[in-house]
Length: 137
Image (cartoon, rainbow, N blue to C red; front, side, top):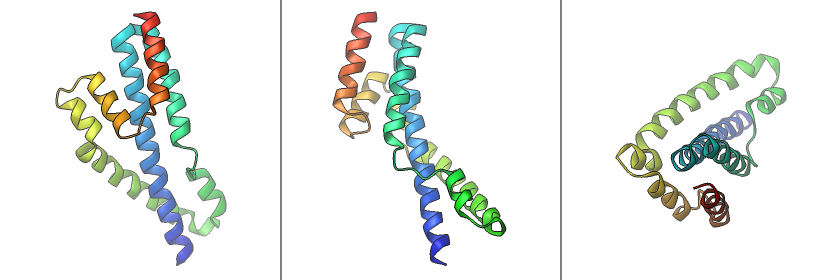
C-alpha cells in the first residue's frame, strides 16, 4: 500500500540522515579534543550539535510516524525501522568515506577538509571552528 511505502521511505531517510548527523557531530567533538583537549570537546560538541540540528531539519521522527500510524500497524513500522537501522549501520561502516578515511590513517584535518569539500560541513561553520580553535590553541 502507498502509505506503507511512503513511511518506509521516510524511515530510511530518517535513519540515513541521523547517521550522517551523528558522524559529523562526533567528528567535530573529536577534532575539538585533538586540538584543545577537554575545552575543545565542549566547543566541538557545540559545533557538532549545531551541524546535526541543521542536517536533521527535514527528518520525520519515529515518534511522529508512530503517532500517525494506527495502533494495529505500528509493529510493521517498528520492523521497517529496525531493518533500515541495520542496513544503514552496515552501509555506514562499510561504505562511509569519512569513516574509511579516518580509520585508514587519515588525519582529522583531512577528514574535516573532505567534509567541507562534500558540503557536509559548510565553509562558514569551518571558519567558526577555525576562529574558536585559534583562540584556544
